[in-house]
Length: 89
Image 1 (spheres, helix red, strand yellow):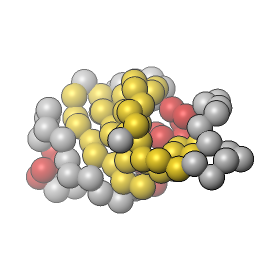
Image 2 (tube, one colour; image 1 turned 90 degrees about the vertical axis):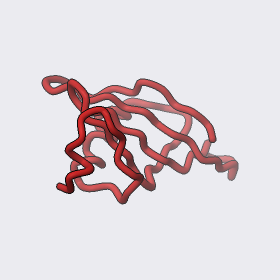
Image 3 (tube, rainbow, N blue to C red; image 1 turned 180 degrees about the horizontal axis):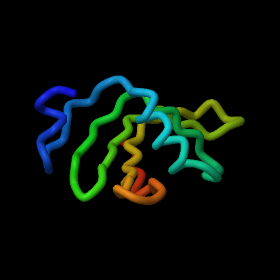
Image 4 (tube, rainbow, N blue to C red; image 1 turned 120 degrees about the vertical axis):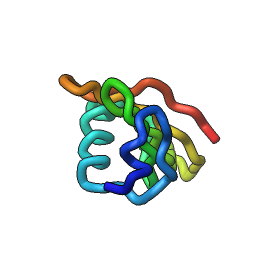
């Protein structure tokens, strides 16, 4: 981990997902239906737990409509991660 990633309250730069980042995304999005979100990059913020901002490609099958979105997820220290908000960009 770099020093930047250890700063409490500060957001990291967007970077490629680690296996742990992907796991958090998958757990939070489990059961989500309708729009398909594919994470491309992530930024994290250490708080009492971890906030995640996933830059995603969003699509609504079967149509070929595609857009970008930010999926914000909060993972508490003890507990399941959950979606806080989704913003189309």
